[in-house]
Amino acid sequence: MMTHVTSAFLSRVALRLTRIIEMVSLMIPLLCWTLCISSVSAEADQISVSAEPGQNVTLPCRSAGSTAVIVVLWRRTDLGSEYVLLYRDGRVDPRNQNPSYQNRVDLMDRQMKDGDVSLVLKNLTTNDTGLYQCRVQKEGSLDAELIRTINLQVLPPGDKDGGTKDGSIGLILGLILLAFAFVAGVSFLIYKKQSACFRKKTSDPPVDL
Image 1 (cartoon, rainbow, N blue to C red):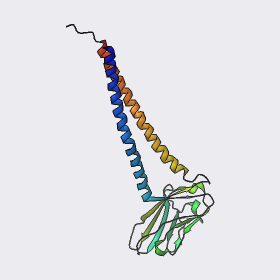
Image 2 (image 1 turned 180 degrees about the horizontal axis):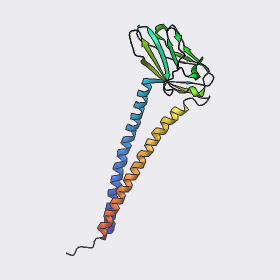
Image 3 (image 1 turned 135 degrees about the horizontal axis):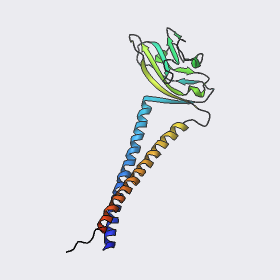
Image 4 (image 1 turned 60 degrees about the vertical axis):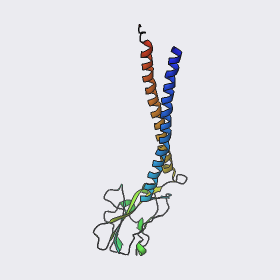
């Protein structure tokens, strides 16, 4: 009788564990798919540019439409109120420009033909790594419109794309390990609860008939 009860108990535990594992197995592909979709969406809003120290790089940006551009503003998101480049009235305005960019930046085409307001950054250093924003103000407008965001990575040779890819892979692996840890934890709790119930039943004195 005891052997039969024990076998039935283990069968119930195994069945519950199997169902939990099946649920997690269905969740993991969905989780990976969600991460991939999020990554694609993020890339649609901004572009990434990689370069090496000492090189010159062009950060592409183009204003759509035929309305004339009167102000071009390039910022880096971690510089606060200081800007990378401010171009207006046909010249670069050095006031409030971050000192590290003075005499190192310019528009690729000061005539801004076809709305081209791309930024040329010379003699790169690793400190130039950051998130750059391209904004333009057009005739008849009072605000500078955000056109493009560019993630510039200045890395020594051999390190290109390493950080971004390793970070994405690490995130996915971490989430998968977390899911399995969750399964193990739930399985242990179920086993503990079932064991307690089983011990209680087997320790109860027989009922006299």
